[in-house]
Length: 206
Image (cartoon, rainbow, N blue to C red; front, side, top):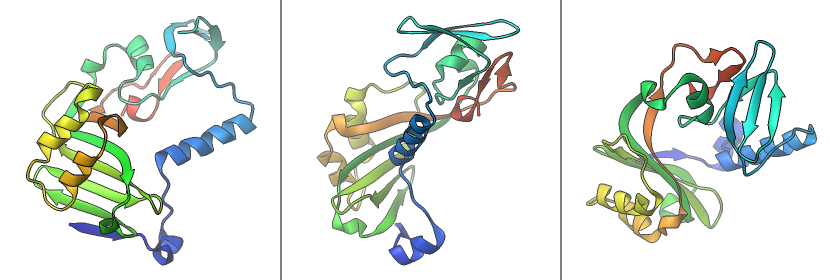
């Protein structure tokens, strides 16, 4: 088992650790301060381009014209599918799965990032408060299909059979609905990330 110490003395000098939800909250507050128009509970369903603009139709029926459309929705990008084609032609599967969730803090974690590694499977734990810790499980998973939410916990239980330390106890103790993220690992490989007035960034294209 590997340990990365996160004591206050060291973190003040060398690192700043931010969780993704905290970064998202900061970015959201900044966009509000700059009067960015944010639309909730909808998604893009159609994109039509002309030499001078890109027309975007949303699920809620709104249609807007823009100078640039940016697809930044990750490996399952809907913008990429509409403009560049089906995901399968760009996907390279990495033969691993990943699951992440938050659960009750355990004293074994102390104030460090704990990385537990075994052949074909690992677990990463780190405290986020006096009462909670975040958990990330990375494991060999030979599948190209997305997993339905009701199967998240069962797959983790089966995958970590015989695993040592606290891994099995943590998995058994987490409600299935509390597993906030579960996916197969893959990389998108594209020769071109732009088409006229649409571009892709981040995991949507690379």
